[in-house]
Length: 107
Image (cartoon, rainbow, N blue to C red; front, top):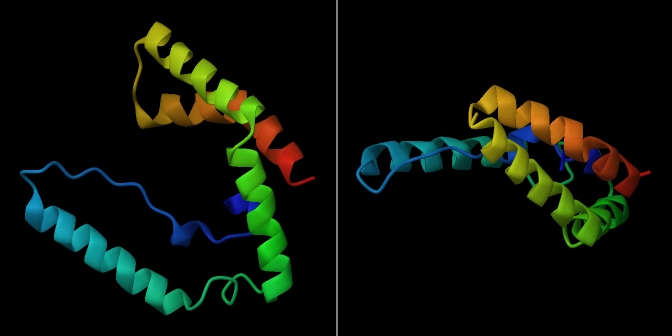
């Protein structure tokens, strides 16, 4: 989404198990407050509605592309092979295996 010009504050991935209800509530409450502060999609990004629509269309085409899905599959295989599921290693692999495909999708 960052390549599409969408602020990174608009997406978040955090873990909370079923046994962590208070943590889940806090994560959702905090994220909701952040999104409300940013305002409508496109406003904080400085995009007019037509530009936003075009960027979101490019993002949709990219995430539904076979090339990107294959890249994710190869990344998963590499993680399993390396037996390293740390956030740093995952970020490194994603950047290494997917950044060119993602960048070209918005070029």
